[in-house]
Length: 451
Image (cartoon, rainbow, N blue to C red; front, side, top):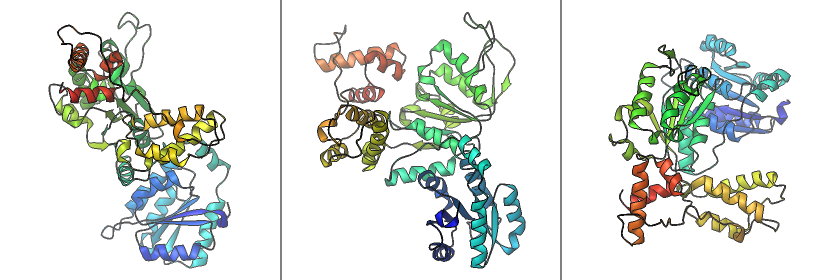
């Protein structure tokens, strides 16, 4: 690539340097993006088309070891192995600059530099991008996208960029439909384990008989249908990341078994007495509030501490302001392509309708709403009349008669919900399925009736 066509990201905490580099490069490149805080690198790379990064070796005035630059170089390479990085270093840190070359930097430039030297270094770094680099980028999976410009989403992205490179266990909290699985995928993608598998398990949907077999594996003959040896999800995720969704809905008995595996870092497959060591990074998600997880009659406190080194709270869509409009346009583009429609915009009335809705089903509800609108709309764009929100989230459940309940509809509903929840031993996913409502709707009713 030629320098004049390149978008260059310059990352340095020295504002004077950013200003000088910006003035020098602006007439010579397509675009210069300047950033003082390296924590924003992952976010910028996910949103901008960057062709080269000019990266400082140090970002803390009191600590000049170069480790910050090496850390962010490794981070960039884990996300974009083909992206050329040129390091900025002081004369006294040449050994660190050489180390950066061993770790994948394309070149380095020593402060203070001559402008011609900087320009030629950047040009050479861009010219070195060849077919091999392009092949690597094809193998690298796309970074899961977090769409939204609200302050709460920006804070979330910064937090993710800090915790992703670590091996800390993460508990992702949020209502149904907020995108907890996207958060988990993004954390894995930005981690140092991203070359290894991300294995997802909806543990809330596992029956008692399947729980151990699915997670820990089994040997041939361990039970009636065990015709072959089978690795569990822990072994499948070895070296990578294990994502346990709906962790708040597993029984106390299964919680004890899970805690033992996490403490010992080994699993014992069903039908075997031989422990198998596993190396996983654990991500968990639940829509159960932390107040419920803190109730030891429902959830082991020692397990909460084990899975919750860092907590990530995913905000509901109703708290994200105009993010709903950005998401709506994103889904419009996706479904217009999918259904071969020419829609590319929303009528102002449709935008107002989208902005004023409270989204009890969160992003998932918005996605289905836009898909339906694209399918049913007949004009050149999406009108307000095309926007129809799901009745699933707002319809009241009217139960059949329940023994022991009065004739009052609220009494009947309360009694029905209590009976079904008790029947499934507090498993909200199973209870919601039997009642024919979403987990979010069931939680609202549990709060409403103080069950």
